[in-house]
Amino acid sequence: MSTALKLATWNVNSLTVRLPHVLDWLNSQRPDVLCLQETKQEDSKFPYAALAEAGFNAVHNGQKTYNGVAIISPHPIAQVQFDIPGFVDAQKRIVAATIGGIRVVSAYVVNGQSVDSDKYQYKLQWLAALQDWLAAELKQHDRLAVLGDYNIAPDDTDCHDPAAWEGQVLVSPPEREAFQRLLDLGFHDSFRLFNKEAGQFSWWDYRMAAFRRNMGMRIDHILVSEALRSHCLDCIIDKAPRKLERPSDHTPVMLTLGI
Image 1: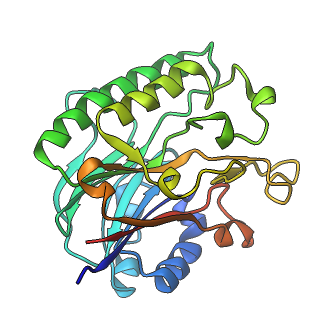
Image 2: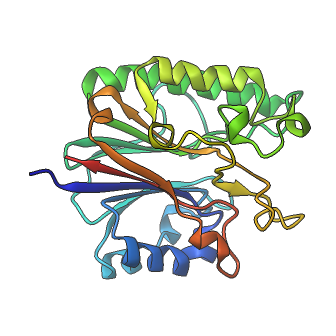
């Protein structure tokens, strides 16, 4: 008899602001793994005590004001890895760990700002380094899940207005090609295993009543290795937290596995 395991990702856009939302969501959903991005906290500020009181362990790779990633779980967290090995980077965008026999990566991919900026070139370099590292990780861990804010809408169906976004970051051909190269390593976009239709998003701008009008993008993803694909039971976007007062501009994505 299999056990259902729930893996989730959520860009919280400041854990200092959103901690009550995260604690409430953890209590109601009881995920086995929650990966956070944009905690925007130094490690010394991370709420280990509040999470422990709620029954969760955590690891965090953070910095002041920007970036920051975490993995939260009620289960033991082992074999922790911070950052992409061999890639010199002051920005805290990666933490990985093994939980219940599954290798989990929480990733906050570079936004890129605009296609003519240095930050865009940094994004492509970062994605290339991520690809090389994940190729090596797959050789060590056949059960591998990479959860996070990828800052890439892989297809026009993942964008509310492809024509308006054409040529911009999040949808540019080099970014989408980099995403496809991750899939070519042997990963699967778990949401698309179950949901094929357009108009399903995980991020909405705070401006122009974008959430109410569903003017969003699907840029938060859970990629799973081939060994996990057959265990995938469902993957959903939980819009409820986006409706709260002072929400993150992202909302959780959650995958259920039968292990």
